[in-house]
Length: 320
Image (cartoon, rainbow, N blue to C red; front, top):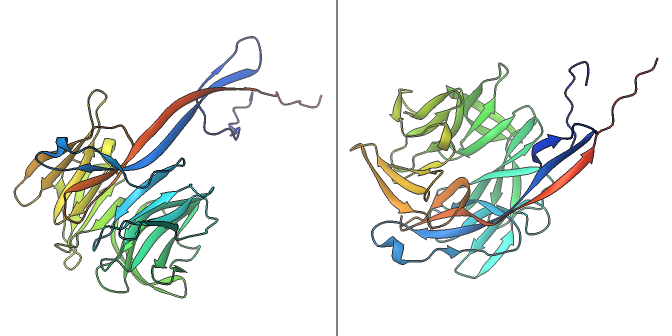
């Protein structure tokens, strides 16, 4: 507008707009992407084993997270018509939804270490809360109130405790450990500030996290509070593409040319090695490792296509 006002047009998905000189018409690209979960082998001789799609569908699947005790996998999918949290159990062959939620966006499933419960982060516009699901009963418990804007949550350092990145009043994101009573966070303890994403290392007990304004992966001892730079290998290019398993850091590296790779970094020895060259195109950096460390589950770009859209803008009519 002439006064510099910026207004969202409500057109999505849309990218690379181009406006005509002689008219008020705008054309844009409409990306079409279908994603699937694919299991890829790790280690020596892995190239001889072909990738396997785990739960094929005509919908979009993502956010895979393998169980710490068996071969079950939790993931987010819109295969029912809306985005929900799903569980696939290879032992029975069953794949079923764990939620019937109306939240706009479900993210980051996280298993409890005994495999009996899952956490999921629900995000809306300007808000978020942490939800726990008991798998035997499918009971759904909201752990945080609307006063806590949760970005991402995991299980805490002791039973009945949780950790979450929460937007603070000053705009920074705090990593907070807490208990939950009647849907409210209680007994809060701030662990670090300016945090992007975090994980609890079940092998060593340390908390690993990234910062939103600083490259690198950091580690803090939950008892002493001593914080250190654990690795400089995590950069803004893969700030969400990492996980900690068995005391080691696994992270994904993508390249403009050539295949993406899964790396494994051992903080005890400083050794960094490539454990898989991915023979497929990844749609995002979310991935998971099987409990035996023999396979990685990635989000595969099953179909990539583009349409063209057009719209005519209406200029505001100002009264004389």
